[in-house]
Length: 375
Image (spheres, helix red, strand yellow):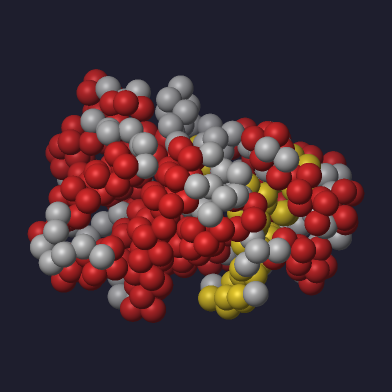
């Protein structure tokens, strides 16, 4: 079994879930709250974890996590955490459950309201600590199990990225076994989320060669195995590599992300659309790749190498072709976004944390053009 000591301790391999109780005890969590969602429960994954970890039978469960986690849901889970006298959080699910669980752990120790921890407002100074968090991903996409942040839709409608090194989970249990039943479309969407993380992390101007190297390795794995994982969900080798690509993507984005995430966060805050974050990233990525190319020539060459593309290949076109091949929408229009929505999206994209680390500065006019191109 691989043990990755990078940012946090990650136990990675088939069967790793058996280490969950041991890791919880290591951090003093005798009665952690399990933060998950109804889809994970319905898929039998919660039962699968309990079968492998008998101690989990006694742990309280919050399964009300929405597809795009909200401040209201965080408060609901926090109330359960407090009423059950919990002492840690086990995040079981995709990025939504992990983000919600991290938020609960933060508020449990550092207090409310959540808005005051916004890093764009200097919120890090209010963090007193977090309850112990252990993440168990059931998708291969967000990499939130090793990341420095979480994303929540606040009551005022903003979708905010909360980032701080203290938010990194105490440990991650990455067991590809838990992803074997993931449906093809969700496999495709989460896989492109991981690939986008790797690409955007490499392109950010921050200087961090180790993180950049991790991002390129994650891209190499994700790009070569996503079609196999989508075509055959029981392909254990493909599932292993996709989960590793997901974890590496988040290890890499300690460098930051970019305009793709700024755009997708702005759309993801619209509750009526119920737009999946990974799918949004996939359909926004080609437009942003075309926008950034002129300032990232050397890095684009390295991306082509990692993706196995010939010199001078059109990266944006390659992503569009991949999206089609794995069954994802051909644009934001297919996800319910209309031309009339664009003016309302721009301020949120401009104000997103990820906008600050895009390699090419984007103006409001640029975002208008990017959204139009992504439609």
